[in-house]
Amino acid sequence: MRPNGDDSSPGAGSDEGIPANMAGALAYVLGIITGILFVMTSRDPFVRFHAYQSIFLTLAWILFWVAFSIVSVVLGFIPLLGFLVWIVGVLLSLILGLGGLALWAMLILRAYQGRRWKLPYIGDLAERYATA
Image: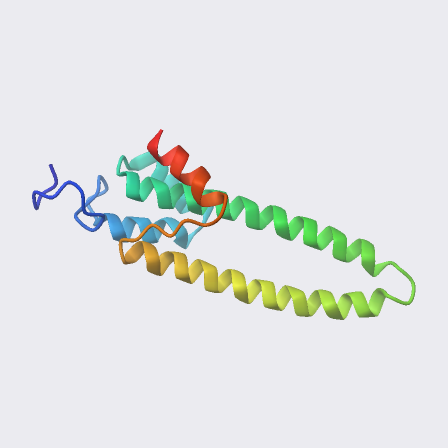
């Protein structure tokens, strides 16, 4: 039983001694690092969900950027298209980077609000691991 007597509320408390909503939000702060930390230390399903979602999102984001970088470099070597590809790549990188930052901030905010905001595919995977 949690100190305030409520076992179900995400903001009630967690194994770490901090409220579960705060732990869920903190799971996103350093991506895979804090995700692994909270997976290893928490038994709270809410915290574990956000920790796993943070881990899987970070891994997907890294894989995406590696693939994007490789494609950009390869297309950059095409004669006459190199400069155009470079310009489009820079603009696309800026847009995707800002979008990723907005997504990250939204996930932190939703976790802090005590809500599970499931991302497509990643959220289902995180939910499966969090309850296992």
